[in-house]
Image (cartoon, rainbow, N blue to C red):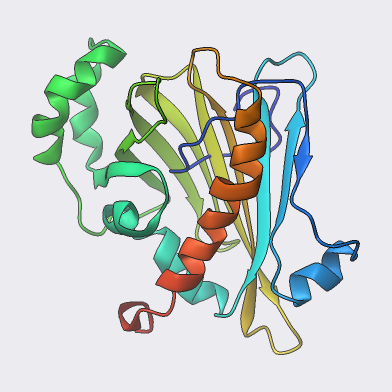
Length: 232
């Protein structure tokens, strides 16, 4: 884990947080955070970590479903591109696929994508998952390819992801799912992302990520969790 990041594994949000020294927080209309969360609002924080050029993004929101069901949604890696923002491709791969990239350069991932697809895993078991993804970055940045190693705590309902190889300087993220509400029928979900695309980005990108992309991660899960396939 990168020393400048407190538990994170960024798992598929591809937005651009590596820019100005500003910080951003999604407005909660003067409410306390716990009150805002109860009202269905989403809390976003962007902060600069000491000694780092990149930013840590954090988004928290309440999802109207038990955490076991939310866990199924965030673990459905082969479907992420259908509902998560800024993803062109995303699928889990068997560990032996890493043999293809042992001597590869990050820019080789584009030509290796077809072969990696042969190792696609429909239901990855266990606590470690490898995932191939393609992030849809805004112009003028090119799309970014990467492979993540995701550590999953199946008892605490947390994930931590680090980039094995990719076309970015840093790509880390995490999910934390906590029971919420008097009957624990809801979930307090926190997603953290620590991302550096490896090139300069205008300062307005921080506010764009805070006010648009990060909240959309929670909204995407809220919509997806209603799908009947996650109820079994």
